[in-house]
Image 1: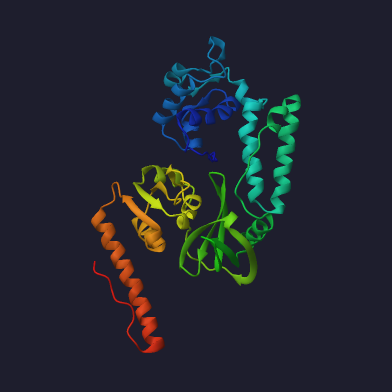
Image 2: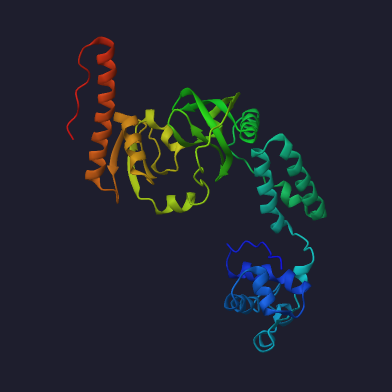
Length: 344
């Protein structure tokens, strides 16, 4: 007996409703056959049937799905009735269609030309299905920070072909040319990103598409760097659970507000233009490097749950490592002493 491939990641209601079309097509099906087909234990099936008993398109007596629990327990067969609404296409309302249309429009901004035609076809069918109710859709727009369409097209081609690209990436008013091995073009919270292996850093990195001004496709194939981290999976959860630190930024460090998910506490005043922000810290190493990069342009006001002593020690270690590197470079070039180390 072939198993039905089913996504059981949703909640109980979603899982219970997943059973309905199959049960309607197989009236009085034995309990054992259902459990074998869906790969679930008998106890779990009965739990889902009890959930299904409380589902329906309306809460009126005739609007609920009917499940014969007694037949399942005594006769060992599953009988589901009054669920025909789930066995035929349901007409979408404008409220139903809006999130679907917005999702397809957002996806269209990120895919290559070959898939854009498919997205256009889906949008056309949705619009046709709505008939005279299209006006509500036209008032809704989706705007993503996805950068130059031509750059996105090159990046999509590189992902599909498995080829390295050279990108021109802008970070705090400086353009850098970087060799990266593209893995995926993503959208998170309305912002487009390129997930790629950075040859400079020797690690996975994520780059905002609206900060990539150019992308050059090369003939060099990407290498196997193992599984890329799942950027989407726990993005919001990790940010929500991360400790917050409070920073005061000078005008020269204002790019931090645009580049990272900060909570702005005070807008820049007309005077010196400094601003106070709170920013989640998933990785203390990242914070140390940001503080070192900003130098006198930032002041750390509060470290919340982060151990202050550990943070200070880490800053000193990273600063000393950088000074050691500069000292070695200076000594090799001039034969003289390099910079002096700091005290931890």
